[in-house]
Length: 497
Image (cartoon, rainbow, N blue to C red; front, side):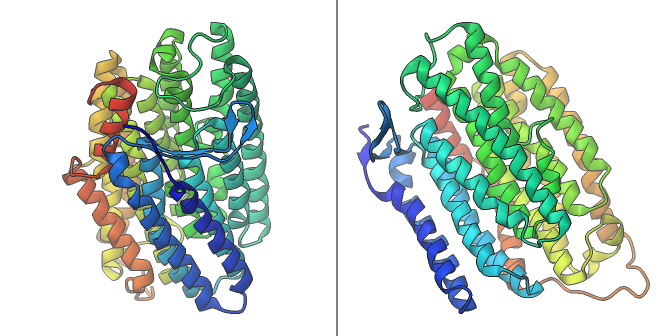
């Protein structure tokens, strides 16, 4: 099918940038108008994205071309199946997170809300730009734009701790960007192009040693944002940010941009055949496995709920990298769908943590005795998604682990099934205490009786929890992440998982 040339990919990005401008211009004087722009842009972007879904779902592509920056490299956009997967997810969750953010900011009377919503809009514009990038150059521009736009959100509280976390964040991620930039220069010098291709662009170029070194550069660059160990340190520190920002970091934007970049490099710059020829998949799978286990052990040691969730994210992101590194159809399917499955489950968990803080002021698991009896809907949703993260059926996380285990067998490396099972046990170990404390412990004497939060906070929690169950019960329903993943894998490998 011939690609369709359309302005819609650009409009999906521009609408968020326009929203940011309108928020900056009117937000300080009119709170309601600031929130109107946020919600209107979120819905409008989603409509634009889903308008492109049918063609892409049936194997088509949208192209938007601008001008050449250097010979063979333009600031171009392309909507293929993988682009649509990421853009559809992020644009939908932006609506949900926008509603939650409004409720959270209103409830806590947070400061600098205009700056917050301005940066929030730029972040989602950058994320969709990353999704729709036709080449490494365009991806890099939006990737760095996302890094910079997230900084004001991390330092939102402007406390010494927040400022230190912001500095650490910039040091890690701007340094990582230099590795990507160097990798781009080498790639262009070898191939004369940076455009993504289903079969990769590096085959037949450079020596094996050069290509292996180049792969390391890219994995450090994108792996830092994907929080693969030992480049994960910025992520737990960033938990000083408001909870909606934590949800944005962990489910929608920053870390997902990292794993998206890793997948792009593996399949669209190197290609499956070259990855296997160079033997690059297995070392990356081992690094991802180490991260999965070690990050889970760190999570066990955290009493602060957001920190426990942060280390859980470090672990869960490496599921995606493991799936991509195994280079088999089922493993790739498991990795890709976990981008969505983890997003819905983890954003629910962070939303619950924020709701608990808004209603009770509590941050630590040891303080949450009996909270399930006073905030039942919130904690039921938390329990559902926590069990889903551990792989308990019929929640979405089970589908991820099923395909990853099949992929490990296809690759001839059953040891990774042991990694996944160990991770599942550790997930249960660090998610069981908050659930037990909430439902099976009595509230402390004199504790304030609280209720579930207002609908601004509760509705996004319930929607995302229900989506996590739906994706686990009917994973092959039309237009679901798994069906999109099947299309992506057919294009990359010519087979169905």
